Every structure is written in C-alpha cells, then in structure tokens.
Length: 240
Image (cartoon, rainbow, N blue to C red; front, side, top):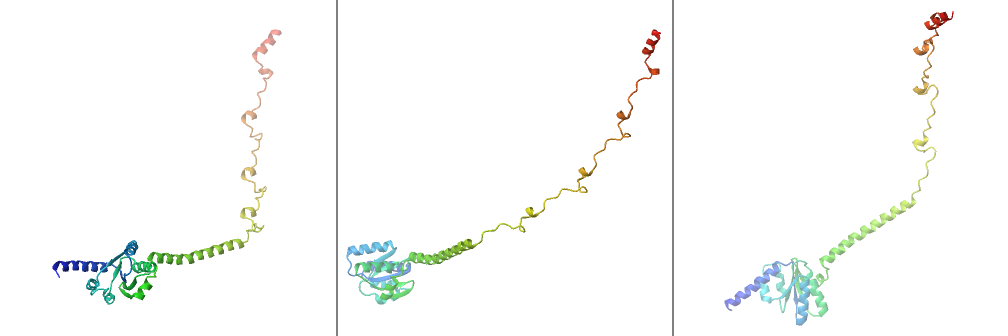
C-alpha cells in the first residue's frame, strides 16, 4: 500500500474518531435495500434533527473506536454499516431512523451506544420509542400544571360556597347603636350650671350715687331775682 493511501486512511480514521468523540450517541444500522432517492430523503430528515449520518468501512471504524467508550460496537461491525451520530439529543438518531425504517419497511438496527451505554438491536428499538426531549419537557410541565389548576379550581369553588352561605349583616340593635347615637343628647345647663356669661348679672344701671357726673350735677337753676342780669334791673328803673 502506498504512502498516500495510508495517509488517506489515517485522515478518515481521524474523522471517525472526531465524530465519536463529540457525540453523545452513535447508532449503527444495516442500510442495504434502500434506493438512492430514499437514502437522500433519510439524510434530509436526519439533518433536520441535527443528526450526522455517514457510511464507513468497518475496518476503519474498528481502528477509530479502539480503546474508547464505543469499543463494544466492534462485535457487530460485520457487513454494510452506516453510522448516525447525535451530538445534542441522545435519542434522536434512533428515533429518526426508526421512523424511516417503518416507512420504507427496509433496514434494521445493529446496535448503538447511548451516553456510554451499549444497546443491542432490541435495546435500540426500545430507545427509538422514547419521545424527544422537548416532548418530554412539555408532558412533564403539563403533568405539573394539571394538578395545580385543579387545586385552584377547588379552592375557588370553596370560596364561592362560603361566600354564598355567609349571612347578610343585620342592622344594629338598640344596644348595638353606634356610640354617637347611643350617647344622650346634652341637656341644657341648669341655673347653677349657666355659662359664665349668662350667670353673671347684667351690669345694673348706675345708682343715684353712681350717676355720671353730667347727670348728677343739678341743672343750672335760672338766675334768682337778685341775680337777674343788669339789663333787666336797668329797664325797671327807667320805667319808674
């Protein structure tokens, strides 16, 4: 074998190693019997599920997986083999291939390794029936929400029932009258309790002794005859 051929084989072995190393699952199938058109359609479905699919020679795969977690696949590497690698969803390769096999009525599982665990053909058929991670998460969330929503409905029904059964509030009785109604009206003040301004006697009119100076002073008496003005006395003299 030429040096160039050896170099080309080594490149393929390195490629296979890289695919196994970066994958969380690898599924091996017998792909014989499908047409080119069917193979192209299958590859398209696998790409949509982010599954890498390729056909390799068994001898090269044996060398690539030697000493790795995928070494158990050596025991089934006989005859035509195709490999599907899953790097995100571990069950995606088996699930998509299983759907294609049911559709075409061709091909078959050989074996596979899912997250480090080896499964034979029967085991791979069971793995293929596991729903996708998104479906499992949706089912899990639904199983949580259903009991919670049911519990909320029960609580709401109980609250409505209690509200309907509660008696309407009766008007307050005489003994329960509010403080402002129960308190007696304030009686008018008695004579002894008259307010200071009412109890104080009105200021009496001033007595004679307390009359104001202008009232107490006697009105100026008319002048006596002796005090008559001089003009009157003068007139009398002239008359005589």
